[in-house]
Length: 221
Image: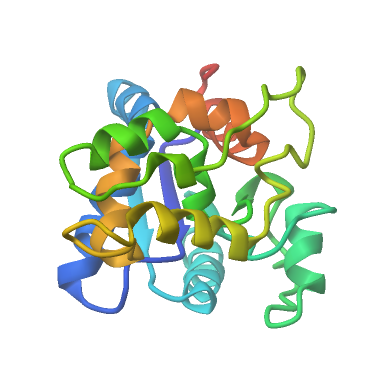
């Protein structure tokens, strides 16, 4: 069991006005872990870093300067994943990040293919969130097949491209009063609205994150 956890997270924009709400949104999504960590008096930090490279750099700096902390890197995969998280980040054009010397496999996690995929994993909560917004097209959200048991990578949802995920959200929201989905404007609130148990069913990468964090704090989640 660790005494402190820090998640170095891609997203949240570049200003304190957007980073702070994103921190709260991710903490709300991870509430089962946060509550258990606090019950065990384990310090908990979510560190939104804006860009993905900034998240990786923050993670690497923490490995060097805070070796006693269980530091976790959490970024979008951007593409369908067919190998280990570190392998994906090493081979992906635009990243090509080397696994830091002191990092373990359990410290690298991907939102596959992106954070918005998690929203599509719980369409009922997305519909509930937008139900009062005239013009929302619930039929634009994909109908998901039952997840395989046990979960395997990739599921139908995690095999969906970034373009298809974005297009589904755009089509569903383009005629609402708020306008089409935007990560900064809607993503924070949707993070807090979707049910993590539903996301874990459809996204094995999310389930892996919860299980890893549970193991780090000494429990099963």
